[in-house]
Image 1: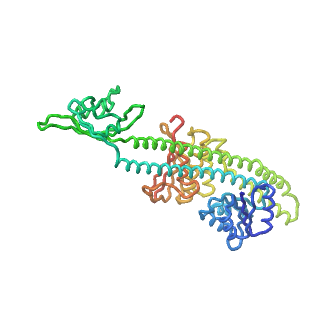
Image 2: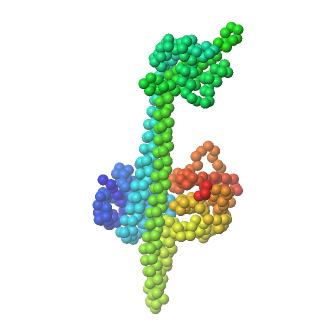
Length: 506
């Protein structure tokens, strides 16, 4: 049975959460822990679907508990929803998310808001579990196919040591004057019916209407040797067999061309293994394509869910806060005692801050400007946000260019560029960022350029980061829209990260 774990040192809060879960999540077992250590032990032993975590606790606070759970391979995939009165502070929310929390909700909260947050986290976890299961299945399939191939190769090597083979000799006309007796076991032909009767062209079925001469005929005409030429023969009863044929020219004492000598090896089993392996590889590649498609679809579903939540926040919570602010503003100018007047003003400021934070949260979840005005407007808004929040000068080159890609992939490109900008803010120590968008032939080039400290590129190592929407995630998402990422950097000069993707025409 599925389980939900709540970690809070306040027993009243645990009782309240228990009642909520009994009402709205009757299929879940409610687990509770009054301390961070107890909660960690329960998470390891019970493996809950989700953890609700308070911040302010003795001994270990919520940030420490969250970091510990995310560092443990047993519990790192369990989503964590932080619940705290500190959630009204953006710095505290950021601290919680950096510690590994998947979502944050502030106290006091409404039951509807809590349920919405839990449902979103559970949906995302379900999608991640589905993708992870698909990857695990692929790994098992690849390992199984590899094992089978190695076993097949080992069998072939063992068989080849005792493989049936026959030797032959033809004269200058190409007529057999000798074949070893084993030929009867391989081809079902008696030596007496071959020697003096058949040519190598007939026996090896080289006269099947092919316009181009094969290497055996060419070598015979040029009196040169050939090695390991593979031919497929059709025997009686529609049985087919593969032979590897090798031969060399012979001459008499006077140097006159005498004919050819050679040997044939039965490679039928090996060819069957090779054909089967090729089919398996094709199946694996098709499976990989399906997994990539599933990953893209899951990401699109996640973005749709983000947009739905953002719209709900804007239409319900945002409008409610705005209405409360307007009503409070209409009475705040009245003649009240100083203590009442002070409380009204403080409440008005709190509502105004809440409106601002809900708007920021809405844009972070799913920027409406992207869907209403397009990618370039969203890029411009993001740069303005960076200037206002971080004091970094920014510029947008190519603002009038319209990026023509599939509409559902706009959010992918926006997230990619946003992550590149965030990387500059986090690591580059830059005071100038330039975002350039241009089109050359059938490709778009979106470059994020900074004047920061740069970094030392690592050779022959896959680019990526641990977790999050890092460079490896960018590469994977670009692969889904047939794009690629190029990074050029110089220590002390800066870095340029360029996203290259084809136009609809390309």
